[in-house]
Amino acid sequence: MIAFLFPGQGSQYIGMGADLCAGFAVARRTFEEANDALGIDLAKLCFEGEAKTLALTANAQPAILTASVAALRVVLGETEIRPDLVAGHSLGEFTALVASECVRFSDAVRMVRKRGEFMQEAVPPGVGKMAAVLGLTSQEVSELCAEVAGEGAVVSPANFNSPTQTVISGEAGAVEAASELAKEKGARRVVELEVSAPFHCSLMEPAAVRLGDFAAEIDFNPMKYPVVTNTEAKANSDPERVADILVRQVVSPVRWAESLEFLKNSGVSEYLEVGPSKVLSGLVKRTLKGVRCAGIEKPDELNHIKADGIQ
Image 1 (cartoon, one colour):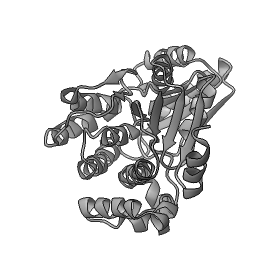
Image 2 (cartoon, rainbow, N blue to C red; image 1 turned 60 degrees about the vertical axis):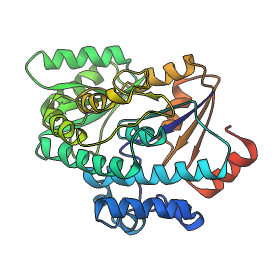
Image 3 (cartoon, rainbow, N blue to C red; image 1 turned 90 degrees about the vertical axis):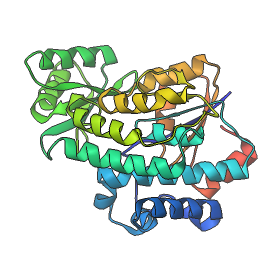
């Protein structure tokens, strides 16, 4: 069995998608479709813009989605590879929904643009922080966050990325306190993330409410492939549940390590990361043993997969 994986925020870089657009008309059309849906020149932002501007949440989210869908359409058009299940990391769950044909791409790109704006506006700059804790178990990180939060502060696990990598999110002072506590408890490293808002924690509640209102206007269609969701770490095939799941995801931790384990336990042995960077491929290799994994975002990678399959 094969799973397609789609990256989330932080995977963006200037130039992403340019090589595929140079070689494949379907990739160019994907960026044109996004431009039309948003009323902005997303291709110019991705190919020629400034990294700081691209990294803004309201820009990065539709840009990564578009680059990922462009790569997906090239894979589907140029190979016989099809997924049995799909999953995406945070923002990437929207790409998974496009892949499953549950959400039209034009609707998805508008949703993630709004999602980015809502998340950015939920917490004033400087109020929140996120940090990656390396070398402690998810349980240890959850406990130290609870210890700090027990004093009335907001800090909690945001991304369970691998068995020994957990991202925490919340109020700046609380994240700093939890980071120091993590070091005292033996964390190998604690890395503050360059993000513009504290994602996947209770401070995002205003964004979740606004996204719910926006999602009420979107049509969710029957799903071609089950989507393994971030909030539940199991497959969902019911389009009527999608809006609620996406709203809960804004304030809930991304259970990525559990999602990978679910995929493997479901019989998936091959993983194809579709979209910019290779962040998820690295997490697969650190989390799962005895599986094959590859990434595709450039024509030469497509050629390798066509020749040798997923290695």
